[in-house]
Length: 226
Image 1 (cartoon, rainbow, N blue to C red):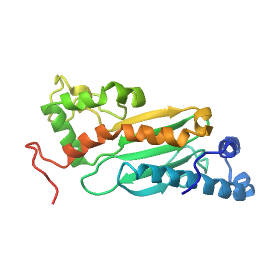
Image 2: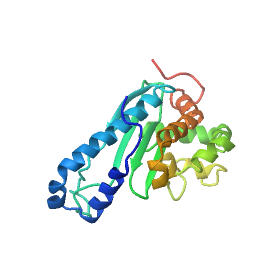
Image 3: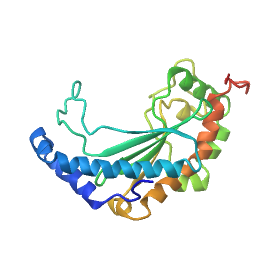
């Protein structure tokens, strides 16, 4: 079992890095970063163990602090946050979890960031046929109290082959199907932060269960799993 709390030292370091985002400063403080990175990764490991008690988690991925600046106008070399994702296991389980820790901008997210072309089309066809169950899940009071509204990139008009006057076009034109919950620094540093993030991820399950059913069946409800 890993660390179960985020220390104020991690947020303080990220604030300093934001003000000194250059290689000279980072190299001078690299040992401090490595120590804090180890502690934060331990926290993410603890969160993964908590997730495993109510979901089948295949792997955890911690993202590197180094930015890919090759195609970016922003040439600052380092990210000013810690972040990690958790992948669900097996073909029958869809969706993923994400947690970013950044002073003043920490958030947990869950859902479908970049569904492939086939999955996106399948989701849209399901919503075109009947979006009532989807809306019932995401509009349930307990779900909305935790996650709020569906977010993500969307088209300005209807996707090719879909009616722009469809009553559920607000959902059909989505390209991403994500939910986000923000946390204050006070919440991040509190002893209950890990439990609150885990509780939030537990509350996303009705959505994941529905989307997994959609993405593992055809429009006739026949299983696509082999």
